[in-house]
Amino acid sequence: MSKLSTRVTNMATSATLAMAAKARELRAEGKDIIGLSLGEPDFNTPDFIKDAAIQAVNDNYNSYTPVDGYVDLKEAIITKFKRDNNLDYKLPQIVVSTGAKQSLANIALVCLDPGDEVILPCPYWVSYADIVKIAEGVPVEVKTSIETDFKMTASQLEAAITPKTKMLWYSSPCNPSGSIYSKEELRALADVLAKHPQIVVVSDEIYEHINYVGAHASMAQFPDMYDRTVTVNGVSKAFAMTGWRVGYIGGPEYIARACNKMQGQITSGTNCIAQRAVITALEAPVSKVKYMVDEFKNRRKLILDLLSDIPGFQCNEPEGAFYVFPNISHYFGKTLGGTKIENATDFSLYLLEAANVATVTGVAFGNPDCIRISYAASVDNIKEAMKRVKEAVS
Image (tube, rainbow, N blue to C red; front, side, top):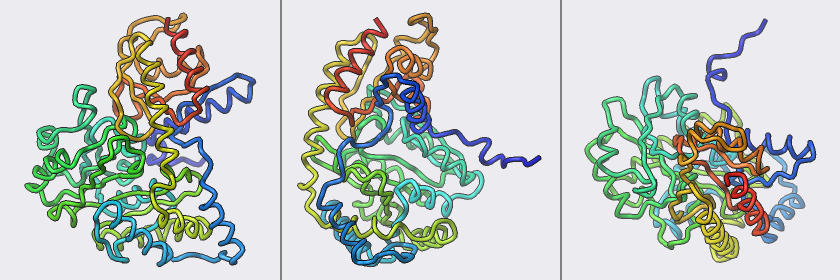
């Protein structure tokens, strides 16, 4: 009898993907499920990007690509980093991967040894902790709350650092809370990190353009952090290209070269047609996708207004991304529709069964008091979902 590795048996299933799969099963059974679990824009990829992909097909792009990406795509990424983030990178510092998730896995695998600690401000994106564990690192969770807008303070960072600390990972705008670290807040964290030069920072900026306050800051903008920061980005969210699977990093050359080496043994280069389309996406002015951001902002107001009318939902106002992350601990210990609610997982499953609304438990994001609700859905679906939730908890 074959025996699976402890690596995979100890690994958690992605909670977002598991909930999406459960919702699909229930739909197949004929249930009217409204899915607010996946972090996926409900827009189509813009036509000008699709046209570039069609042109690439007609131009007979069909061969293996360079492991770290086409040179002209890497040049477009360099131009984007300079234009949007005032970051100067050279070709050997850029690696293109099959989605930003692979970028993160590459970084973990090339930077972490067994027992190395990685600080994760909670809530964090659902896969961070397990990617760290796959690389035999140790996730160190730093709890935050609505009162601090789900952001880690400099004093919390200082308290979490030990001699084993190797990395800090965070996202801004944050998935799941929508929180954005300001330049001043990042500088305060950098002042702590200045005392610990062994720590490498992973700045996940995949939601960079879905920003409602207008000021995006990158950790690598600080000269003393530039050589210690890996900036992760991609096209899934801002360009509605989740299924195209293209992410990229800019960072210290030694880390980029190591990621290139790692990727060469696992997947090699990213899809050739998708890469050609991404060149067009990144070279276009950001204003070409502003219509999506404007619509997300309208939906943010709508869902916050509707949630404010439901007892027991306590929300911050997210400054970016397309999620709300309400604290629903009000319901813990209560019985709803015959179901005893002990934690966020119980509550999320109750909403799926009683309201036919798919959300994601905050346990998966390192915060057991909250659930994540995506508002990357139509206005009609948001209204109907919140109506059902309100009825289910009344």
